[in-house]
Amino acid sequence: MAPPRSLPELMEELVEEILLRLPPDDPACIVRVSLVCKPWHRLLSGRAFLRRYRAFHGAPPLVGFLRNRDPLDSCRFPSFIPTASIPSLAHPAAAAADWSIAWAWGTSQRLVVWYPTTGDWRELPRLAISDVMSSGAVLCAIDGCDHMDCNGGPFRVVLVASSTSGQITWACSYSSETNAWSTLASLLTTSKFCYVKLMDRGAVIGDQIYFPMYKKILKYDLGKHSLSVIIDMPDDFSNNVPILMGDGSLGLAGIRSSSLRLWSRKVNTEGVEQWVQYKSINLQSTVPGIDKPGGGAEVIGFAEGVNIILLRNGFGTFVVELKSERISYQQGLVDL
Amino acid sequence: MAAPESGDGNNGAARMVTLISSDNTRFEVEAAAASLSQTLQLTILDGGGGGGDGIPLPNVDSATLSKVLEYCIKHAPAAANGGAPNATAVDRAELERFDNEFVNIDQSVLYSLIMAAHNLEIEGLQSLVAKKVADMIKGKSPMEIRRTLGFPDPTPEEQAEMNAHMLEYGWAYE
Image (tube, rainbow over all chains, first blue to last red; front, side, top):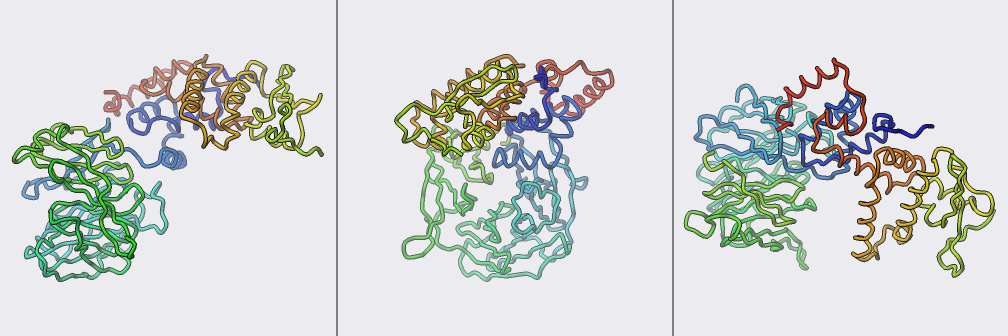
């Protein structure tokens, strides 16, 4: 067997080994490489390769995030803010995802599930909950799924909503397989600040979805179809955001005096769950104006599995990489 | 059937095996180094390759085999430590430096190496070469990749198709 003199002479199995090692944080690279020749295009766009690529590189990198607009804005559809070289996303004609960024969008009128990567979308049956504080989450409905290849598969949507008085919170779930909503589960609360925060994303951990309330965390159990409120919080500050930790457990992120603080939910020696602070990142030198009046920042989101937190203040939006503690400014967000 | 001498716990000389390239060159090498190859490991555990026998490798020429063995000899101590949990940072840095220099070679040698690593099932070497070639690909346009990696010139149809795609995927070229 003559030794190969050029890459095209290599067997496909080895070409695959090479292409598997292309960097995942540069989507443009994969696109350019897929145009080299037809066999490479076939290989790179095949499901088997995509699964292997995901498994090889672990959690996918953050290539951008969806930013909700002001609810009073006439166009209430979220805007996509890229953080890597990636094309703009096709909005549904009326107005979006990989499961990793799947998002249910609620207005008083319509709910749409959007697949941003393909531009496909699906309108859900209308709900009889009118204008209230609401938030939602989209979940893969496949039992034991590793979420490598379930985009476009069956899904569930969970919607939570609070009355404007904050005394009652509802939840219901939708199944794409039956195309129907469940009955409403409801929770009466006497405490103040038990509002679901409008359009804030939830953290999905198995069958449990955690949504931020002003000073509490709302927990919805999909299996039991029941709501509860996590009342013990690290302190009395508002605007904490439940996050998914690297190990898949529940965490909490919030800003305290120019620092980003992170807590994890741990069981103590008496068997009681509590918040334990495990990280504090000083933002004073990296986030402009944070120590000035009106420059205070808030946590606005997180990216699953990649340890990234998004912050915003009057100066812009910032991406915080928790491992390296690197903070980068995202341009052009102030006016959004 | 001879019981394999593992080399460890044996204060004498390490066990040697002989490998024979496709052009009939004989290479004598420590069994521990040759055992980085999953395929050779089985033969060696069965007691093969010792004495005057030698293990013929009809798919690997002598130039490639000497390169492969250079890699195996360097990586054998770390591999013997089971992925080197005891390795110091210095050892790891030294291996990394070696690897970077090792693949700084002619492309045709890289392809022969990855073929040999594949045939002999030397996972670390296959991965190292694959990563090197992937690094040569990234940051380039489709035409640059074709030229760099020795693809034949595209036919007019292929060229037209690439141009059309480049228009469609303009964002990937900014």
